Image (cartoon, rainbow, N blue to C red; front, side):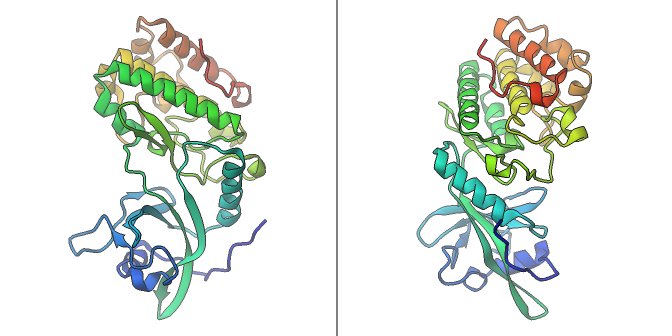
Length: 312
């Protein structure tokens, strides 16, 4: 395993990161592509502010001197195995030719931050900026176009199948980790730290995903394996098909930032909640087939759920 550089006992706060990024000609070396990069999301003072914030990172949007738009991911907490993890993920993506991924580069000593006059360099992840909407926003915009939702379902199933063919699982599959391009949609995977690749079989990430998409067993057993996406992929795929036939369910059951329509309470009470009663009344054969498949998955251990989405 590659060892990441030795960092100081302190880790930069969001305020220190904010302060450092005000002068990209100082916080990045001249050789860095981020030297003199311009923030594309600024506060009223003209200073860089995050375009997104996750559980463990802040994401900034910059334009480099060459005109490339990048996402700068700055970690909020001390990194552990990040260097080794990203190295193995990148090597596997390259060797398998996996599609639907953005270019990314982990830099273990990139961002200069000072505390009490003492400078230290900290790690960042640099990746292509995804300007496309995440899956939840795309769905909301296209709810009244059932043919587009059917196209999206097909593309999602195909992209998920290709992941499995490459021995990859996303590990934290939910709508905010999926971007959708255009009205004839293509899928882009986002957030690569939780990815499963064979070289990381014994190295699960600390986070277990969102309970509105993960099988309840995962939170009991911390399951980790190549078919970790089998259940959340079913939730997403089935939801897209449901909405293609019953778009009104979005307004009734969608909670922004939390779910699409299914929630953890629906998984804890399979077939018995108000949502289950509504979706089980939809008169479409393939939707009903997928709903039965989803109910069956809830009654199986994760390891016994087929990794591939059924074709019916």
